[in-house]
Amino acid sequence: NAGVTQTPKFQVLKTGQSMTLQCAQDMNHNSMYWYRQDPGMGLRLIYYSASEGTTDKGEVPNGYNVSRLNKREFSLRLESAAPSQTSVYFCASMREASLGSNQPQHFGDGTRLSIL
Amino acid sequence: GNSVTQMEGPVTLSEEAFLTINCTYTATGYPSLFWYVQYPGEGLQLLLKATKADDKGSNKGFEATYRKETTSFHLEKGSVQVSDSAVYFCALSLLPGGYNKLIFGAGTRLAVHP
Image (cartoon, rainbow over all chains, first blue to last red; front, side):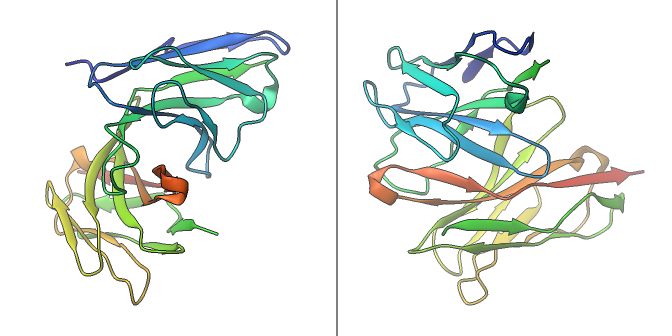
C-alpha cells in the first residue's frame, strides 16, 4: 500500500530552469494538495484540487502551476525557478474535501528542491 | 484570519520525562484540530485529532484536549521515548468555501535522549 508517492525525492536546479514535481495517490481520494515547508514556517498551501478537473490557489501560489491529470495524479510545475523556491515540497491527499473538516490528510515523503 | 501558534523548539528531554507542547489557535467558526508528526526524512503523519470542544484525541500515549475557552490544543505525553524524537505540527481545518484546507503551526522539534 504505497499511499502518496512523490518523485523525485531530491533535485537541484539552476535559476530560470523549469521542473515538474509529480505526485500520485492510490487511495482513490478525491482531493489533493501541494504544500511547501520552510524552516520556522510550518507548511504553507500552494495549490489544491478539491476534485478531478478542479484546481484552486492556496496561500502561496505565485511562481507555480498545477495540473490534476486524473484522479490519481496531481503535478506541480515551476516554469522559471527562483532561489526563493528552494524548499521541501509535500503532496497530500484526502478522501473528500467537502464532506467535513475532520478528515486527515495523507502526505508523501516530500521532494527536497534546491535552486542555485 | 485563521492561524496556529506553537511553542518554539527545540524541546530537549530525557527518556521517560513528561512532554507538553503548547498550541493555540485563532479561527473563525468551529475548526477541527490535529497534531501531525514528522520523523526525519519522512512526510507528515496524523498523530491525533479532535473535532469539537472538550474532545480528547489520543494515540501512542499522546493526548490533546480541544479547549474552546482558551483556544488551545496542547500535546502531552507522560513518558517520552527516544523514538518520539521528531517534529510535531499542530494544525486546524475549516471549510471555507466548502473545501477543506489545513493551516499549520511552525512545528516544534522534539529531541529525546537516553
